[in-house]
Length: 469
Image 1 (cartoon, rainbow, N blue to C red):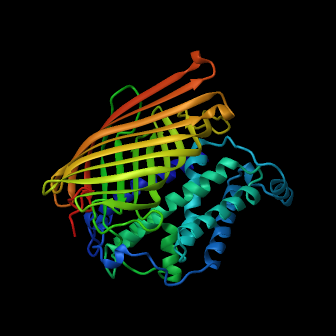
Image 2: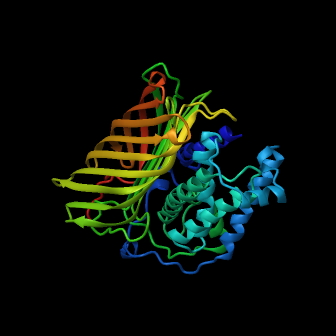
Image 3: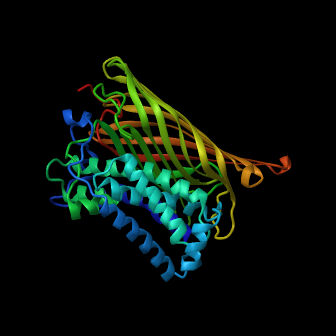
């Protein structure tokens, strides 16, 4: 069941890309309108204020989500869902373990479940930290009371922290989609916001908006679809979809991060074919930080939280991380710009390894480690941008196995404007996975590469180099 959960969650990204075209009917905007953000106001650069809040609503929803998940698993005949008072008492009184469930379940399904609980609290009027506490409590309830298996330390960490990071990004993005439509968002915007953040959309519908209704600060986003071609003998689906959102730009001279994830970046990619679905999901956001520099040369720096899920040919890694990071913007002349981002994070617990996903067989190692990110962009507003990025995750799997896993994903490409809110892009992606086993002769190296041709719909023509307000 875990593999199907993973594929279903990844397919949400594809739905986000394709639905804009599908709903282009009378009274519903075209896809370019759906990604267009609202115009920032003075309130966009102040602390977000809740109109009201509820502690009871997210608590009820937390319990409801967990019970529904258990009941659904019981109906499907899954053994771990057969909980009894004895299993609950055992889990509450015995030592926690590190489980070896499917990679996709541990590294994607659990974080998404945590994001749903987090968003239930966030859309009820609570801030980042209180919402994260609800996510932690929801995971604790699931591990001890909703599973017949012993509670898992790695699941508790991943569900709580990755769920908070992913949940905050989806919550903010869903609101940005709605608020880009002004006082009366279109049907298309409501549908897209509901796909992005279902718990937030549900709570807004049932209990009304709990926050001041102001546009977010300047952001840049794009949705893309196209063709993926492997450059080696690995199999990778030919249909490629992609999304990217940058919220709170260092190029915006009025923007100063005040609360967690005021500044964040999200990028999701999906390759699909008749027999394979693979993809990447990268989330990073500033937990604590500030802005430095002048109007034409600015930087956002501070402590970042990261969540990555990579499931592609020869590459499999998932990790949460915390560490210092910076995003720099420099204006070049009247229209050009150079931007760079970097994060160096400590991974308290992550996983990396092979690309099989078979129930009962663990083909990956998990443990602590580190992750690194470096991105460079050279662009000209209205024309296009050249992009280069490199990401790496290292997992010290010898604490619970016999290998040190290292995974690297790098890419380079060009996106060029062809019309207002429309662009074409080409990217070349290289990934590598190295496993260093206790027996050096058993070390393994897997590599793959693809080239992608895409048509993109962008939120603006600045490509992240926002014009000065």
